[in-house]
Length: 296
Image (cartoon, rainbow, N blue to C red; front, side):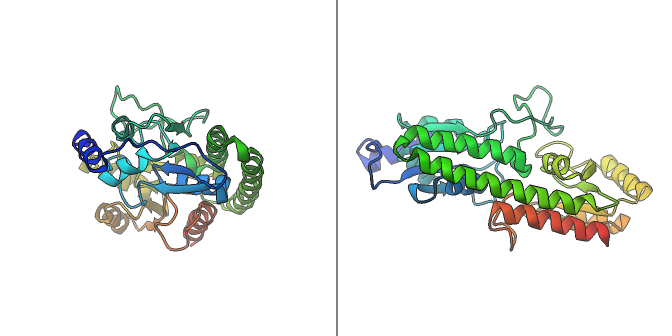
């Protein structure tokens, strides 16, 4: 399919997708796979960047189908930002078909301490759970990679990028400290998660994941697994089940009805729930919602 899209675009444009070097007035054109990477690039690049996210946040990042406009955007971009770790399996084909020799791909997960992803099939090339950005310590690694990429393609504004990076890192540090102090006052921090997007978040802020509804990516949980979760929730009096806005709520609501646990809908990406328009507000929202539910 991507090959067909590439041929269509090349015929329609009839000229090579080559952009000139970045000049004094030009912006660095950045394409991000996810909204979170778009925000990180905007925080570090500010007035020097023009950033587009291929995914809005309500699609599945695992199974996203690229559009012709995505191919066109990559053909004109200086940087492509990805998480890596097998999260965006569709990216390599998109980059190949864009045929942009000036495009730099920045894999923002490099150097992050990974947690094993128990939902991937045996033999998968994925090396860890890819939802790394939900830990602000990992977010700091990611924004540093982005700053390095911006400096590489636009060295003229290096000092601006370093200043903006330092400012954002300070804000991340302060938010992390404040939220950790709030969670530390909780007596019960146990949760069940619908989708295993939360191990980095839980590790950083001190929540304890007792189990996941989804056992394998792309597959519904078995009846036996749901029965075991029901037993576990009742036996251990787990109060909260974490779901996400893009997931099917039928199973999680049925499990809550059977056990008396409360469903809390959190978001792994900014902008998908009201009040989560930025990464910092996303962290605040997710922590606050969990604290309120666990204290009730």
